[in-house]
Length: 325
Image 1 (cartoon, rainbow, N blue to C red):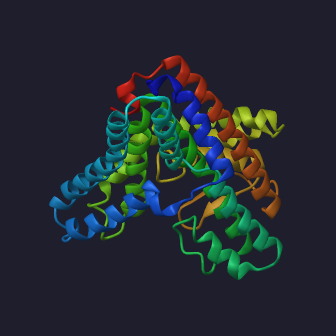
Image 2 (image 1 turned 135 degrees about the vertical axis):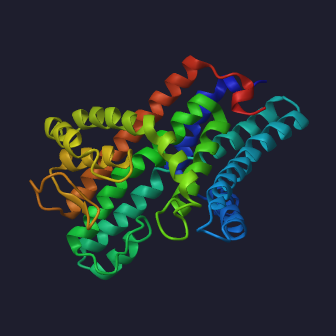
């Protein structure tokens, strides 16, 4: 039996796995393996960060990470061929494929982290709220005010709907396991080394640029799907569109500002990273309730995207080799 025709069902199974179980088991999680491979290779390739060759070595690292990611798809395909294509083998390797699809995106984990920060702020435990928000943002959090902690949380929710859900499933629909796992490898590289620091300015540039290219269409698709979710939730769509148009280019990233600005407008709050950008207007003062509303918007947007991915995958009918060889 060929697994390719069942790909929409595998996407649905992956989403169900995420909703019920989340990221576990971590010991075999591909992203953990990608992170370990990145640390190993970066230490050996980035020995002279200021040299011109650092950019080429950084590009080689991204390609190597993609190779690690694609090895998962190759292994599943090879195992399926060796096991035969009977019902038992199809069920087993279908489950493995669904799990690998799931590891390319994450919905439940974002809700857990955002909810933890919200709860700590509600309890008045700002110290632990600062510590917890540091798990999901790259900025220093030790001296953030309560409003800045909440802003960072809402920003992360708004941005992660792109690289945490929409982009990996977008590439899964276009390229099967190769697409979603390859995207996750590139995005993982960007999240680790795509910074303009002295160590990564040259070395991390290929990862940052590739991530910008890969997220270009998904970020704009996310705007459309978020607006649809906002209509369902009866949010102020007109204000959201106005703020999005005005502030979408306020961030250094050509993509991150789109959904963050839209969230700021829909929620009627000002989201800001000191010294970097400010999005939206302070129609309302940021409170834990805004984190809850942002998460509700994120969840509905993600659900709409999962459904759309299943429908489009069924319509495209990927050939077997695009799921895995």
